[in-house]
Amino acid sequence: MADRATVSWAAAVARFMKLAMKPVDESTAPSPFDSTAAAVIDLAAYAERLATYTYCSGAVHTAALVYVDRLCRYSAVTDSQIVLTDRSAHRLYGACLYVAAKFWEDCTMPHAFWAKAAGLCPSELQKLEVTVLSGLKFQLDIKPSDGRKYQQAVSVAEARRARSLGLVPVKAACAGVEDRIMRAKIDSCNASTCPGTPASSVGVASPVA
Image: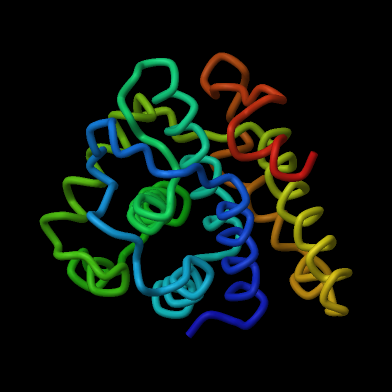
């Protein structure tokens, strides 16, 4: 099972996503990630479940956050209707985490196992994986500066939450989680192959401004 620090970081990432959620617009067509109603399980608990059973590193959860944000930003430009709401968040996070795990850590967990952990049937997870990849234009690399930006945004949000509740910030409990995303493939990433992240991106700047 995953270590406690990774599970805590996954929950922190999910809580950060919740800060960026938008109201459901019933007048628009649903995206492949939308369910008919909000999920029963809280997003942070869902992220903890995925972290516990999939063995992904904390950095992969950060990468999943990057992908969710990119999908929403690209959707706003292309009008593809991918919006982060309480109806889409779980499928978005689960599918993006699966893509991130396969890309960054050469995930070897069976597809059916992943689907079960994510609460999806295997065929649905496969369709969502294709939707994520096509929505990202298969651009999965992340510039180190962008990785640090997202990690810092989550850490700032968690520090504020910890102060309000009198808790120890999650960032301090999992020091070094940000290092992993700077290794391996990311070392060869440059401006010509990695899409940048503008300061006004959907999920990063606004929730912690």
